[in-house]
Every structure is written in structure tokens, then in C-alpha cells.
Amino acid sequence: MRAEHQQYIDEIRQSITLLRRHLDWDNALARLDDLNRDAEDPAFWDDPEKAQALMRERQQLQDGIDAIERLERELEDSIGMIELADEEGDEGVLAEAAQGLKTLHAEALKRQVGTLLSGEADKNDCYLEVHAGAGGTESQDWAEMLLRMYTRWAGAHGYKVEEIGYNAGEEAGIRSATLQMTGPNAYGWLKTESGVHRLVRISPYDSSARRHTSFASVWVYPVVDDTIDIDVNESDVRVDTYRSSGAGGQHVNTTDSAVRLTHIPTGIVVACQNERSQHKNRATAWAMLRSRLYELELQKREEKAMAEAASKTDIGWGHQIRSYVLQPYQLVKDMRTGVESTNPQAVLDGDLDEFMEASLAQRVEGAADEPAEETA
Image 1 (cartoon, rainbow, N blue to C red):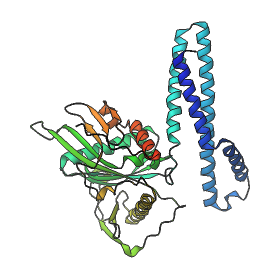
Image 2: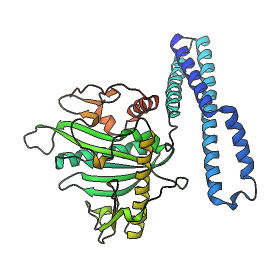
Image 3: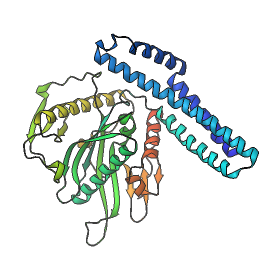
């Protein structure tokens, strides 16, 4: 066995051991057996809410167990193929097996990082807001680029994306937009994206082709499910209705059906305009408000609290979490972890996993490193 192959094998085995430990393997198997027996009980669905919660738990356990067993099975297959190719001196088969081992290694490490998603709301779906900073068309165009980036990331991971609110820019781009991301651990993966994102490029809107710096903010907060009770005093909330504005097409709305809620004690503002029915928009806005208040409570509990909500943060110098430089060189750099990419186009097309994983690891491990030094 060649040294580089053995290193991959050892690291995959270590990841599998950590995954088993995180899942609490023996107890997980026993719990899954119990849930399977419960699901066969004719009275199981007498309480639909409880039954649905148990079914979700069963599916999560089954998915975790299946993933580990598949990693173990594919690792043994790869080892067998490499050993056989070594014995027969078949370099073609050996190269194929080595590539499979490399792919398996990457998946095992990704699943290992996924074990860091153990926060109270990490498994929940989430809302993602993008707000343009000062700077008019430049920042509004940048905000739309960020919206596309997260939509592409979500699509690559099989997440469902629903547009909740959309405010078009005066000439191009957006002033703000809100998406709902639905999928496994949506909030857990996206929560470290909250903050100000900075773009440096030659402006396509500047006839003199000068370099411009633009800012936009991202704010991520979890969707509150039925198991979380958040009380909101209606007298603390101002309700405004208005006519939706947009760029046309799906954003056209000819009635005053959009709803904006302002929570007076905290200053939190949410809005929904994706439905033509004011009733539906109002219900969604209240759900969003409850989610924002829940996230505020999570901030108070956690040592590593997130920054203030995007709508209350100065969108400019000193607050940015990531810098995207397209001119005079090509570089994306996370200011918290130091992770870099020299392929900005891939990042803007949704290749964000490396940044998310590093930020998540830093957050969970309670790293106290100072922000990376500004380079652009």
C-alpha cells in the first residue's frame, strides 16, 4: 500500500470513528429500532404532531446510520481494489481506485465538519436577507450578485428556495430581498454568512472604468417550528401594508397586499410581499418576526453571539466578514478565518463550502483569533 493511499485510508477511518461517536452508534441503533416499532402501532397517528416529530427523528437517525455504513462499505471496496491493482501492476485501475479514495476522503471530512452542527436551531430551515449598502446602483447590483450566489449554493445542495420579499433597485440590482431556504441543517450551514460583504471591481456603470468598492449585508436567522414557543405582544408590533414594488414579471403586484411588521422594543423589521393575498403575507411576516426574536434569544445565550441584525448594522468599512476582489487582482478572503480563493467567479457561482466549514469550525471551537488582516 502506497503511503499517500494509506494516509487517506487512515484519515477516512478516523472520520468514521468520530461520526460513530457523534451519532452515539449503539444508542442510535436501539433508538431506531424503538421508533420503527412505534411507527407500526395502529395508534401511532392518533397524535399527528407527535407522530410527525418522531418520523423526522427516525429519518434523521436512518440517514446518519446509512451514511456511515456506506462510507465503511465504500472504503473497504476501495482498499480491495487498490490492493488488487497493486498486485497485478495495473496502473489504470490503481489511478481510478485512488481517485475514488480521494473523493471518499473529501466526503468523510465534509460529514465530519457536519457534526459541528449541534446548535439548538442548526437543523432548522432559515431565512436569508440581503441588503444593499450605501452607494446606489453599485451596491444594489452587488446585493443582487450575493442573492444569486446563495441561490446557486442552495441549488447545488438540493435546498428549496422561496422568495419572501424583493425590493428592486432604482436602475439595477436590488435594495433588499428575503429568501427562505428549506433543507437539512439550512440554518446551521448558513448562519456564519451573516455580516457585511465587500466587493472591489471595475464598475460596469462607470463610463470612466474606475475601480469601485461596494458593500452589502447578509442576515440569516432560523425558521421557528412548532416545537419552539415564542410569545409576541401584538401591542408591541406596528403593522404597515403597502403596494409591492419590483422589476416586473413575478414581482408585479397591483394591490396593497405587502405587509411590514416593526417590533418596537427591539427595532426589528420584517416584510413579506411574495403572495397576492395580504392574509398570507401577514402570516408569513409574523412567522419571520417570531424567528427573528428567537434568533435574538439565541444570541443572548451563546458566548459567540452574532453581530446585530443586518438592518441595524452599518454596511461599510470595519464590519465586513468577507472581501471579494475582482480588480486589480482576483481574490476572495474571509476576514475571520483567513480562508482564501483565487477563483472569485466560482465563489460567486455558489462555491462557498470551504468558507462555511472554516467559519463553522471556528465558531464551534470558540476560536479567539483576531480577524484576518485586510489585504485589499
